[in-house]
Image (cartoon, rainbow, N blue to C red; front, side, top):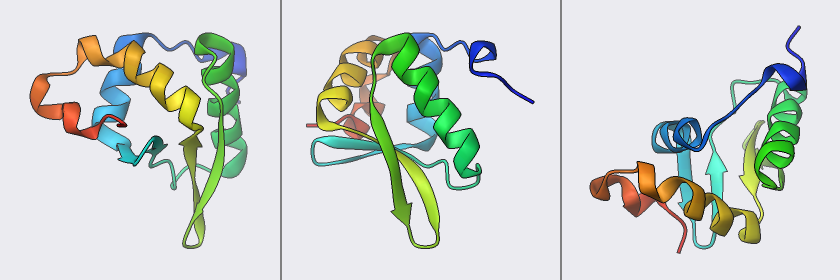
Length: 95
């Protein structure tokens, strides 16, 4: 079983994850984590909060859930990962 202390993100890791599975919706962002169970997604949320102060919740997407960061955290994420994202991928960043 994976523990929260086993998860260690770096800003580069977040940038790669977001470029692959992230999406912006106005001022918010989503990580398309629908294939993770809710417990695993909660673990990821706790790790994002502990390591970067990023807060969010699980957002229903049809019959699944995905991680949605709150607006303030979406802006913090943008600040953290923009330096690692090529310009052609920055369209995915929140407004």
